[in-house]
Amino acid sequence: MLKKLIIFCFSLAFAAGLFAQSGDATISASQIRYWIGSGSNEVIFAVNFGSPDTCLAWGYRFNADSITVEEMMDSIAANDSRFSYSGSTGVLNNITFTPVSGTTFTSQNNFWMYNVNGSLANWGYNQQYVLDGDFVKWGDADVATYTETSGWPWVYEWSQTVTPVDPPAGAAIPDATIDPAQIKYWVGNGNNEVVFAVNWANPDTCLAWGYRFSADSVLVSDMMNDIQAADYRFSFDSSMGSWGPMLNDIYYVKGPADTLKLSGMWWSYNVNGHMAQLGFGSQYVKDGDFVKWGDESIQIVNDTNSYGYPSDVAWTTTVTPVYVPDAKIDASDIVYWVGTGSNEVVFAVNWANPDTCLAWGYRFSTDSVLVSDMMNDIQAADPRFSFDSLMGSYGPYLIDIYFLAGADTLKLAGNYWTYNVNGDMAQLGFGEQYVKNGDFVKFGDESVGFANDSAWGYPSNVVWTTRITPVSAPQQQGLATADAIDFNVYPNPATTQATIAVEGTGKGTQIVLLDVCGKELYRTDAENDGNYTVNVSALPKGVYFVSVRNNDSAKTTKLIVK
Image (cartoon, rainbow, N blue to C red; front, side, top):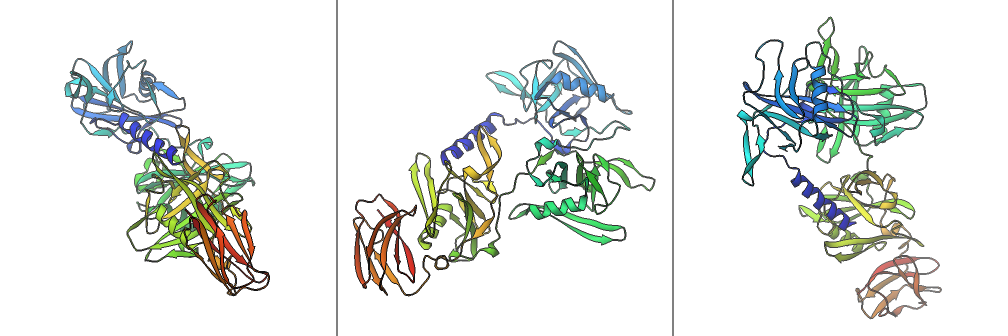
């Protein structure tokens, strides 16, 4: 899994370098004020005029996998009477923008150049295809600079700030939406579905959940309460006003120190792109509806009522589906802590044999700690826990993790392990990944993981939804349940033989040697106190368990064979 992760990270870095923007001025989709078309794919289209030096930008939405630049320009011209262009067979003559009043923007030079994602386009506008997320900019060559490549000015750049075009007078801005098929995380059960989205302005981010139910309709407040109960990242505050419950704020926890919340003065919300008619405690929605809350500080007002208050508003930020949340546990719920210090990390493992997730707490004094060091310390302290790893060409990689639960051993069921830090895929192998105070580390068997996303055919975000159970101290698990027996194993680690010095024995006492899978390798009677020798020279290097037990008590400790 580590090798796959490294290949993925290298490919991501290579792709980022390959498609890196040049010095051409750009603009983000969240800043666009006028969107034309509909669909889940978006392209930004900008024109830098030289009369005067002004750059204006539109947004274009579509459903197809790709469109030509010509199709996009034709659609903008058909919807915005201020915009027009002339040209033939992919050769552009001119672009004109004529506002209702003021200066007409047009070319000052004898030709236009254009970039796609900061690099000169490869084809004429009738053959150049663009994809979701692309940025297309036309520029008057008279106000362009260029970057020399092989002695030829192939890349033109326009440094003028890109200004979003306001919609034409009387044109309503559509509220950005999302197709239910794109939703990743659904809450509730039933045949009826509603998409619920929140657009924050701190930063400008819009996230969406899906909600399923069986009744004919559901209150917006009930839907929000159910999402809050299911997703620990989402919460909201409300208070009772003279007209019913009033929303104060909506929160989304992105990380230990990163929470989205209200930036403006109040929240407003739409149902199916129109201002809701009732408060969220009175508004019912039905199958197929789309509900979006938005921070008023970034809303676009399409219309106002007779009292001067907004009656129709929109938020144009792209709606992003939230990932399925990784099951989590609070540090206050941890029972068994290993290590000392004021800094704390929660460490959890989700097995698929059976589907069980257990959590430890780890304390340390340094600013940060390697995941591998934390796991080694837990292995040394807890005789039930162990793991195997090997050194590969990219560093140490994990083979398996074990937990001895009575006669059963939890171990890998799928093909490999993968792990998250604070709910996101770890960026480094466990021998290189540092974690700090407040972090949450979870290893999971990929066979029960939920893949939120993938890249190059490999999962790039995987979560495990099984409820996390805090492990209790070893002596509370039946592995060391009585004080009658006491023993010590030495040398430990051992190479040829290990000696078990036993006290407090009695009738029926036995010494048992087990491997990490719980398989019995050796057993001998030990009804008298003394030293008992076990030959380990033929055993493979690794972790084993020595258990001394009788009818009344049992104690187990770990033995390392080198």
